[in-house]
Length: 82
Image (cartoon, rainbow, N blue to C red; front, side, top):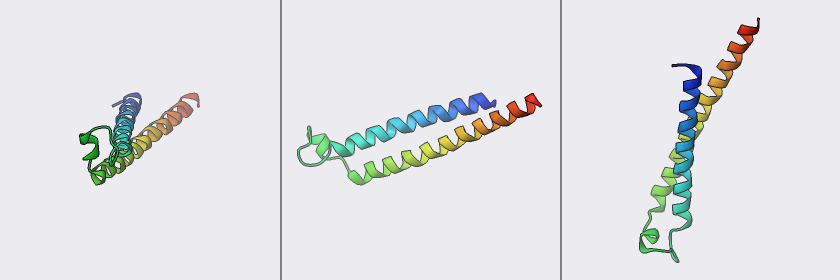
């Protein structure tokens, strides 16, 4: 696996987790009394909070992989110049 493919995979993972966080946050915001539909009113907030926290953890892990890839890229560019 190359550094660029590693970074692309991490970026794709970050986008996926961002979508999960957006969906969970929307479900939480639209649930409860006064919800637009009965389905929205029946959303389990604990499940949505778990989904939100899980997505946050995965996002952070992907961000660390992306950062490590950037660091490796910097090291390679330094070695190449010397």
